Image (cartoon, rainbow, N blue to C red; front, side, top):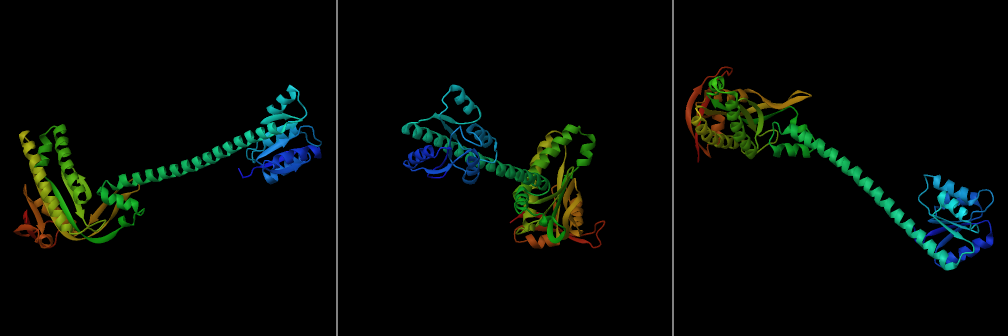
Length: 370
């Protein structure tokens, strides 16, 4: 509501208008006037007064009809109306209030009573406007909140999909960047780690399904914690098999070093698990293969189901090294050995020939960290 408030006085008797106008202006209100019902409607549309003092008995449109039309106009803001009339019969008062008038004063009206009613109606107007503004702000906040919730739900859905194969740190970076460009097909040097349980196939053929699932659950839990810690990219779980790689989709420092540290920590954890498994009659070991080289990487699959995959000779090398590793062994390629020799002790195994690889692979055994 503007300050000072604007009041519309409507009466077909100029003397009555003048008396009311002078009383209101003495209280520092702004006043405009109308001479009949039609003039009142026009003035209201043009100036949107904060309060209307309205006579009932007027030519063209009487006050009752003016109230009906103003209250029926949804385009107008809330404007309180005081009927100011000589009609003092109770039925007239009821009729005026029933069509929507907010108060009723009979002529002649005493100055203090008029000003008290005006102030009361203007307080109601101010409270109504404040409530409307707060409601509008609340509605806007709700819309913003709903939009934010929808955006967050979309991000959570994307994050859930990405965390199937990426560490949560990497997945969150991709989601926060609001771009999947990092997952598009590209070529990069990566360190690939393959590992699996020795003797698992024979074990799964004779063990109860519950025992098999219990072994896998503890093994996967140990691997998952280390994948998160070292921020590796998980390509896939295949039963007891595990493939992961480093330096993609986000580059990382010392990817080969991270790979060997993860492999040694996982070997230690699985060795502890293996002791418990043996106490239950399950004889299982653990082998790892690690290779370093270039691969083509990107998302593969279809709309409803996809993975992030690496394709290339380096993947085959790591897989063959893992297949060849005995229980407790971590076999690495020559390139990995050169990349980690400042932090790891290695032992030469020799030139190994593997199915699917044209050239023999210079192989080393990871012994310990310096």
